[in-house]
Length: 507
Image 1 (cartoon, rainbow, N blue to C red):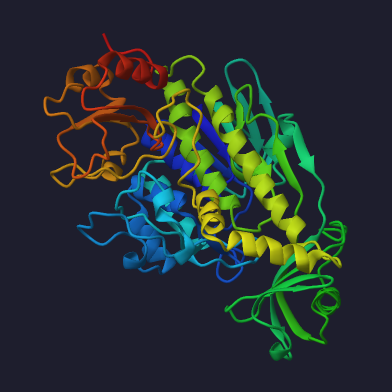
Image 2 (cartoon, rainbow, N blue to C red):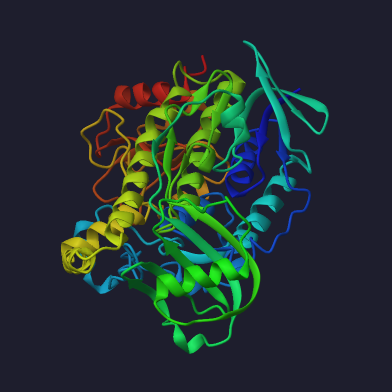
C-alpha cells in the first residue's frame, strides 16, 4: 500500500513524485514505456523551453544547477549577477504565432515585485535533460519507478485506489494521472474532457533534405500553412490546415511528408530520408475538474493544446508544484478542510487561459487571403512596449495571480526572492518543501506565532536586503505568497492565513 501511485514517468510525474517524497510520502510511479531513453526526448525533437516560472521551481527545490548542467545552459545567462541589488531587464521573450519580439521593448516598470535571483531567465533544454535531473531526485528520495507497466484498469472505493498494470494490482491511498494527452487514467476514471476540435495537423520530424536551400530558416507562413526550419540539422516542423484529419490516421511515410511539405512550402523541396516523424493537432481540451474521488490529474492528462508557444511542459510543472504539498498534507492529516479542492480551483483557470492563448495563435496562423493582413496587425500591436510586456507577463510564468481573497497585490503571486541580511535567499528556505514565514520586523514579532506550525512552516527572521516595503510574509511551499503584512504586522491575520493553508496550530 503506497500513499500515492503516479501513472507516467514524464517530467510532470517525476516532479510530483519528488514533491511527495520530499514530504515523506511513499510513492510508486508506473510508466508504460520500458526504456527510459528515447530519441523523442533528445535534441532536436526533444527540445523544450522552460519559462522563468519553471526555472524558479527547479531553483526552489535545489535542482537548478543540475538542470543547467544537463541542459548545457550558461548559468550567467540565467541568474542575476552575484550581489546584484536590482533585477536585470529580461533578456528574452516568447514568440506569438511565430512572431518574434524584442525583449528591449519590455517595460520593466510594469513588472512589480522583482528582486535579483539565480532564476531570472527562461532556458532551452530537452526532455531528456529534464527527465534525468528529476529521475535522479526521485531516486534519491526513495521513489520507486516501475517501467514497462502500462495501466490496464483503475478502481477506487472510499479509502483506496487500485491500479492494475502488468498483470499486478498496485494499491494506494491516492492516484495521480500524469500520463499525457491520451491519458489512460483520465479515461478509466471517468473524467469529462471538453474543448475545441483541431484546425490543423502538425508534423515534427528529423529528416535529410536533398536541397535545404529551398527552405528558409525560422517560421515561414505560406498561403497554405506554415513550416519551421530550426538551426538543428534536419529538423522540420509543419502545420497543414486540414482540420486535423491526418493525425495518427495513417503511417507517416516519406512520401506523405514530402507531399505535405511541397504543398505547405510552395517549393519543390525533396526529402531523401526520414529518421523520425510524428503528428499532432491543435485540439484544445481540458478536464472539467482535476479530481474525481481519490484520482487526480496533472499535466497533459488534465489539459491538451497545440505546442505553439511551448507552454505545455511549463503548465504541467506548475500543476505538480501546486498539487504536491497539498496532497502530502492531506495524506498526513494536517491539511485544513478543502485544501485539496484548491488544486482544481487554482490550476483550472491557468490551464483555461493557456488553452485560449494557444487558440489565439492558431487563429492568427490560419491561412487565407486575409491572414497576412491580420498577422501584420497583431505583430504591430504586440511589438509595442505594452504589447511586448503583455506577452512576457503572459508567458514567463511569473505574473499569474491566484485569487486567494486578498486585495494585497502580492498575495496570490509567486514570491520575489527575498534575501535576508545574512545572505540567505527565500529560494534556499523553500528547498525542504515547507511553508516559510518571513519576518523582517526589528523585534521579530511573528516568531512565537510561527512556532505553532513548526514542521509545516519554517520561520526566518531578520532584516532583508530589500523588503520591498513589507514587514512580514507567509509563503506557501509552492512559493506563492499566502499573506503579507507591513512593518507592524497583524499577528491574528498571520495566524488566520497559516490556519487556512497549513491547518490548525499545534497545541
